[in-house]
Amino acid sequence: MLTQEAHNTDPGGGMPLLAAADLQDHLMVASNDLDRLQRLLTDACDALLGHFYGATGELKQLLHGSAAASDVDAAKLHAAMEHMAGAITAMQFQDMASQLVHHTTRRLRNCADRIARDTMGDDDEDGEALIEEMPLRPNPVTQDEMDAGSIELF
Image (cartoon, rainbow, N blue to C red; front, top):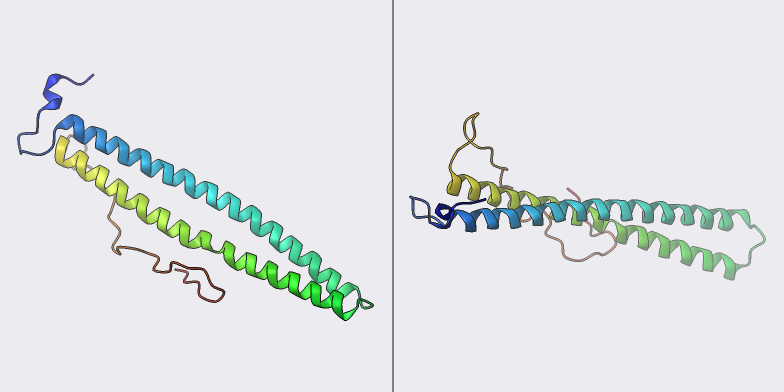
């Protein structure tokens, strides 16, 4: 349990120790939530892509396997394949979302580490406390819409 001294500001005039520890905890919780979101997005997108590719394969087999199919049936199969291709393209948003989540997580951890260092000092027995490196770019993904052929992947 923290003592009464934890409520006081540090000697350098910074924020109170308890407030800094609370803020650091909130930043780390947000960072961990983003990590969990990343895993959920990845799992969902992998499953959806697998199903989309499977359905596309079935449609191709129907299109190529039915030589006696009418022009209307062939047109419907082609339209269905175009919809599947559009769905697969839309699923590629996971790459952009992943980059944003990773970037935001690094920024949050950098803030939490700096708060800990600045408020609590370098109390690491092995020397200076490690601080998560701040991302160099302010935003890794500049795109804010999803159109076929307009995906920027890094």
